[in-house]
Image (cartoon, rainbow, N blue to C red; front, side):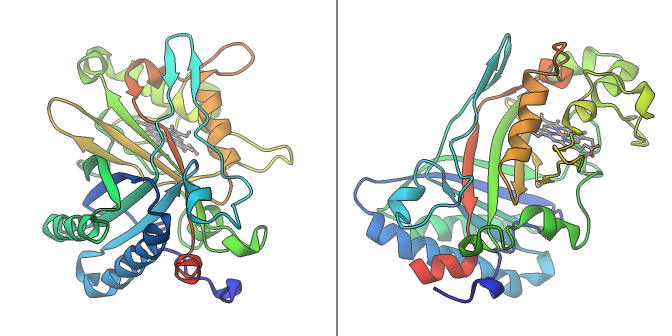
Length: 310
Ligand code: HEM
């Protein structure tokens, strides 16, 4: 095992936003774990090196291992909080689980590079995995979600991104790794656009054009930011780093929601607060305008963990 204190994180975990992204959802064939393991390490190393080669277009990426597949690859050690996606069905609101064995996120400000790299990654895995789903994300206007609201404003900034997203000494073997949750949300934009702007703003809890947060007293209990602004038992803010981007085509479009975090509980608590709501049943009204069609839990280990195990 390498020196965990200096384990290199995968560069896509904490990267700043980009113009384009590609997401690959992969399932491994049966009985090929011994080949998949070194291949995962090679892909991680390849993505790491491309960040230098394509620095001009801010290339970054990471590969993550599904909660249900982890033990097949690394049976000797498991991140303590890695568990399957916490599916929720509450009334008409659904956050289903749809797990994948592997997840690759690549991002850059040049789409042609991403296209080349996505093909290369699939080539490296040839005969070992099946590409089950693929999405291409893009920056929309000034980093807005397709609802027209700026997304990512309250994300951790600077070094705080690492603090929120990467494991430290609490699980030394997994230092530099991150818990990853992915949900593909498909928006009902015609329904959303029929909602008057003030009501849309009430649903989010921020103004639309100038992106100003509502005063605390004015935030409806059903607003998105009210529902996800949570504190832990010690009174500290529960934080995640969101790496979401809009995706899709005219036919089907929405948000690839991606949370990376040094724990898994913060995401779980937020999702529960959105879908189930508080004790009075105040849930997130944004969910009346969008539907999660996938939900997957992964762990993205440090580059060094994968190389050591490969
Ligand atoms: C904030 C959109 C799903 C967690 C926001 C904001 C927008 C937004 C517009 C306000 C600006 C900002 O601070 O980024 C969406 C959309 C979603 C979605 C369109 C899905 C369709 C989720 C989910 C979670 C989540 C599933 C977590 C389980 C957060 C958090 C904030 C936030 C933690 C920051 C709140 C704050 O500190 O003010 N989201 N979001 N979001 N969202 Fe979401």
